[in-house]
Amino acid sequence: MKNPKASSSADPRLMAVLSKYDETESNGPTLKELEIDTEFLFRKRTFRKLQEKRTRAVCLELRSQRRYLIPMVAEVEVIG
Image (tube, rainbow, N blue to C red):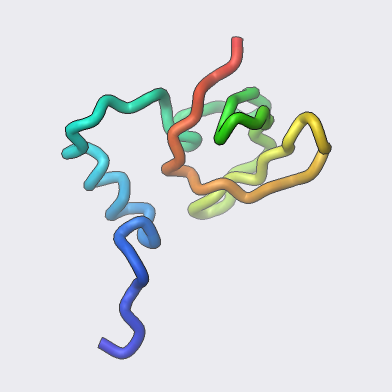
């Protein structure tokens, strides 16, 4: 292989399949399961999901009003 992937989390489809076999309980839904304009917590910060790209979502951090790309397979905690 010329350029192998750095880890299994680089491939979203592989990550979704592997997460089914995790022994630890999941904290909440993945970002892919949320509707647009849903507010959620991710890494102790509050975001709003604005738009879906192919493997990531464009999210607005509510405190700083900055936009971030977050992987769709990320587990989040829904607010409200």
